[in-house]
Image (cartoon, rainbow, N blue to C red; front, top):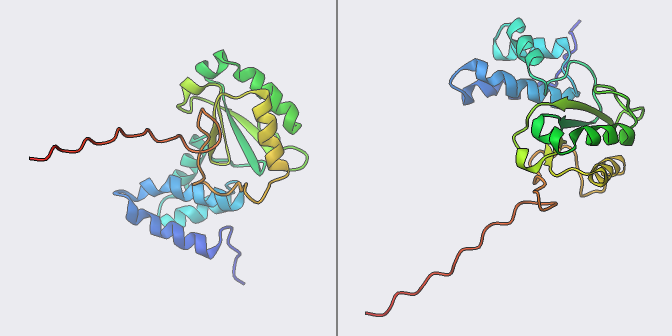
Length: 198
């Protein structure tokens, strides 16, 4: 009797192709774990073993990578995971109040807890590299800056009743700029001066 695989055959093939993109096969571990987590929602022991087998690496090494980085999850999480920055810059600009507001908005008491509807969970993380726009967070592969209680309420509402325009699974969608929704505007170039006729 054939054992069932934690990961789809298509994903395993995709993971097997990853090492060719990197100088060392071990460099493919994080992208492979990210793909596995994207498919399952979190990393099971079986999924990590399958990643190790697909990459021809030691299972202990793969598990060590998964347990070291906070963006990998070994237990079920909400469909929409808020990563709330609570480093110094964000804390000085109100991150703690934003975390408290988020807890109330999604109906959880602490980090890691999944909301009753299964839609939300959150985690407090260290610097995400956008200190000038603090407080900020990441959710559904997008960064949100200059957080306010109102902005958090909008993000939660959008994910409770998504419109066709909103999809949580499109990592290439534009991030929110400090000015608001969408990409940052490109600077305008000054018009070129025409050369004088000789």
